[in-house]
Image (cartoon, rainbow, N blue to C red):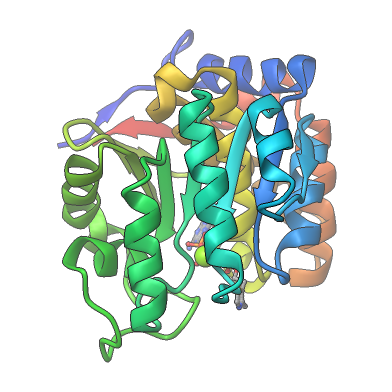
Length: 278
Ligand SMILES: Nc1ncnc2c1ncn2[C@@H]1O[C@H](COP(=O)(O)OP(=O)(O)O)[C@@H](O)[C@H]1O
Ligand SMILES: Cc1ncsc1CCOP(=O)(O)O
Ligand SMILES: [Mg+2]
């Protein structure tokens, strides 16, 4: 059974509080992300009011990571050279009590990638956000399954809710599965976000970008990672909905989504955010 949870003073206000605090604090987010997503990720963080920094060298992280508000790690274009740097940054984040967020892009595409994701998860991310196929693969620890299509999901997010709960319980992280409905869980509680438009799947790196936005929201209140994650997904979805009103296709939606995220006001957020307790 689903229960509406979005009355005045509820999720819409919460999401607005997160967004307006991101705008006033401008949290510094270290991003170790894939080559495809760097531009959209940095522009998404900037348009939301956060401050992105794409620093990925393990030589720099000991100086830099202790001073960030949050760390974002994405394995999209993983190589054997990058993995040690990701681990160094994750360990530093934990040591200095900075939240860090993982995007396990195409987790099941190879044994190397799956093992890397599991090793990163053992370094205690605050949040893991993936699509349904990625979360199912991580929960079942399986790679090369016939259902995987690389970075895109071949499952619906509703198929991955139990996998997300199990991964959250085993890892201690908040787990988010994106899709037509985004589901966010800490292993016990599950909330669903019904914002966004299907065309967002036709822009590469929207998943990567929203995971970075989650890092910015979690930076604001690390002790409420579930609320921060749901709010970030809803706000990004609302920006997509407003962007779609003037977009002609994926390329212009990309531009309008960034513009909408930058221009979102309290009325739009409170009236459009659709978060429900599942
Ligand atoms: N069918 C859909 N309807 C509305 N929003 C969607 C839909 N599919 C994906 N989204 C949104 O697009 C963004 C990227 O999600 P997704 O495509 O699942 O991630 P990935 O790119 O990692 O596979 C998320 O904000 C998600 O909510
Ligand atoms: C196409 C591609 N290949 C490696 S990473 C990447 C981007 C994936 O982005 P997203 O997971 O947000 O669709
Ligand atoms: Mg992805």
